[in-house]
Image (cartoon, helix red, strand yellow):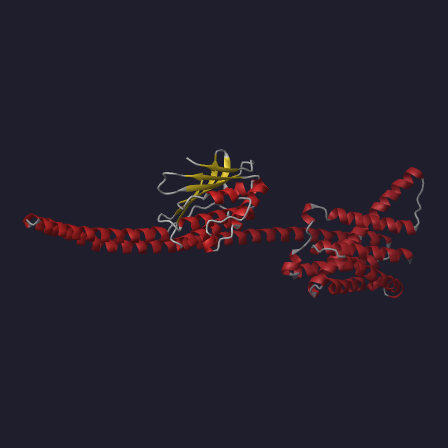
Length: 471
């Protein structure tokens, strides 16, 4: 009786371990405590089953274990029952394997040392130890490490239920048999047969699931590519419409200017009064300039509205640049971007993505604020290799830094637009990030440049310097 109770407890512990591995569940302390209470409850149950209902032992054990998993893990009835059946079957198969290993070891031991007796109290614990050892090794195989998580995703189908019930019947037959030959031959055959069927079905299901996942991923990529093409086509159609408007406008402007010039030339030949010719020439010139400015304005609006920024292949950086471009456009500032290096590599090797975006946004925002106050409103962002190091270069057409601003940069909250609510926190944050990555902050005056007045750079050169350059 002691052998039967300990054997049943070890099978239940193994069944619990297999259940966790099949569904890829985590073990909590509360679950271990609940399992201990369940095992204590099962001790008298196993005893009573051995005395009165041994033919129904397997069925009752699996039913009680299924109820335990439903209460503890809150899984569906179908999933819990099928998983419990498979777990119990695998646990019992591991018991058979452990029994044969122990039998072989005992036979070898008896042959070598002429000793062929092992007490039941020791043999049952050896059986349990080898059983658990076998299961731990089984689920360390790469293919089996994640168990059968697809059972939770798609539920247990009819095939799984059929295999589980077949395995349960084979185990029940194994438990009922009394003939020694049947006890080892027929049930063992069925048990291993069902085990191999489960393995092959398992492999087939994993392969099918992988192929479905690859197919779904390919379909998603194709859908994304199709959406991108549709969006590009829509953009091209919109650009075509804008260009058509420009051509339509030109078809009216050019003939009008041609007519005005012809009229002036014809009247200039006969007009002798210099003052009258001069007046007509000025009037014609005003018309030409107005038409030219109108056309130039249309082209500028078209180019600004349809400008496509270069991609950095880092989604967050691209989104930030698009946002800053729109923000600059709202303030009448022309923002251009140039990329000459692998920004993805820079973020991986030099600076964290969040810190890089913080640096970029603060520098661009300061440049836009500086440029919007001037007649020429230009900002240029360059990211790439400069003098052998990754750098962020921001050119702007704003006023140069004042001496008091330069003296406080990096040490105190200094700002060039305090009258507009500037606090200087951006520059302080910038220097904190630069110190973190040992990067240098460089300000360069561009005297004589008609487009840009200064350049602010962040250079990842491991020098952690503040440099001011002037011509």
